[in-house]
Length: 179
Length: 179
DNA sequence: TTAAAATTGACAATCGTTATCAGTTGGAAT
DNA sequence: ATTCCAACTGATAACGATTGTCAATTTTAA
Image 1 (cartoon, rainbow over the protein chains, first blue to last red):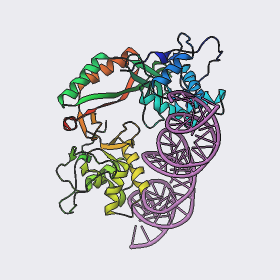
Image 2: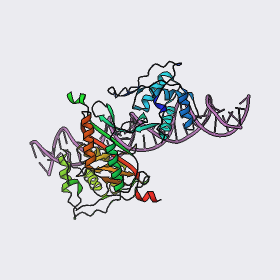
Image 3: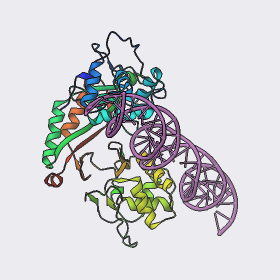
Image 4: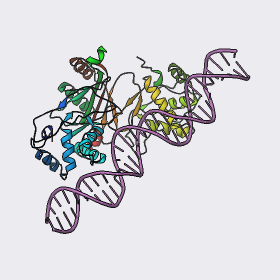
């Protein structure tokens, strides 16, 4: 479906954006995969928003901009803080609402782990699951087509038509094991 | 570890318990696996509670009793309602706290799906995962040792020491597909 | 340019869950 | 059996994440 590659890119050269560090105050994560791809001009953002059938607003442009830099898995709070640091006039609810819209349209994917706040990531071109360190919170992405095949098998056994799945592995990362 | 089989059983013949229907008002589930095993006397419950290093209270006895009948996957709210219908004097917090204790001691397992309230199930003798119908909420349990093996493989690749995992498959059950 | 419809920001409300605290109770020690 | 203290309880407040409300503003099609 709409595995849009457009969201994986970023800002024009004409505008200068200092990279915004998306961080959690309470729950700092170890360095993890950052999004850094070839810069693109803001027109992509407009196209993306229009494609969703929504109006192009300044707020939405800023949010997309912030999401395309920095950490790969962010909470709504983190996105808001990044947005807010540049545009204090943009409200929390606006960020939340837009994230929901993006999720509805499968442009971002909601990742929920335990009872923790939802994290959002730009919908990856290729489906993957997560391996999370229970100590430091580091998230590693992995793909396992073999597991996917087995999952389909399980569904078929029970005559279910599979729509999606959640697979989250938890463990200690190499670094935390040595501590 | 403590895969206690004791919790899978139930009440003595001397006491008569009408089966308590654990249901959600808002979110009625289709019929799913119920817990029904040979009756046991309440002494098991006492043993279980003592084994956890806790005091045996009337409240805890009632909670265990309610959990050992009815639906396999229940929310704290549902357990509370069942408890409350027989013993209105027992408070919400007590149920919550005890569920947490049970989870700490691995006598029940917390299952979180999406942003929905946590569901608890008596820790199964054999590990299993869940296949959930997105339409009616029916939960089917399944085991896939093959998937488990592949998961270990993934962890090893990244030098993680696996502690646990969450695997939830979602789809349409046979009944809902025909509607 | 204009008007309808969508969007916004501030804020209140909700939900699931957890903490607080004064009063009660279980059970070990007497 | 009685005593005593830590564990437990119930009521309620607090909490964090998320969602709803609504008047004011902005977008965009005409």
